[in-house]
Image (cartoon, rainbow, N blue to C red):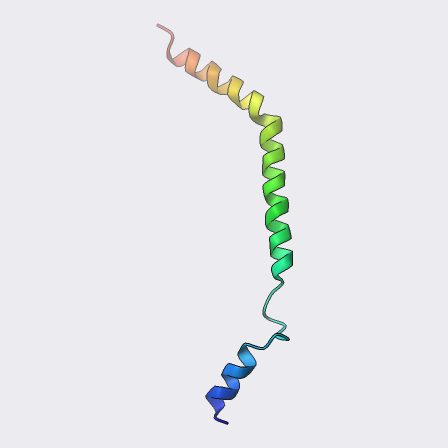
Length: 61
């Protein structure tokens, strides 16, 4: 077997420690999305009030 074939074969094996942890990345992504949604749900009324106050000050005659 040639060196290139051996290198290619060992690159795509399932027991490669450098391959990464896909379920871990999925969990991190989901946890981040839930955290952002939670913070947005808590801060939304304050942000809406801030925006409406700023728009009211700009549009005053």
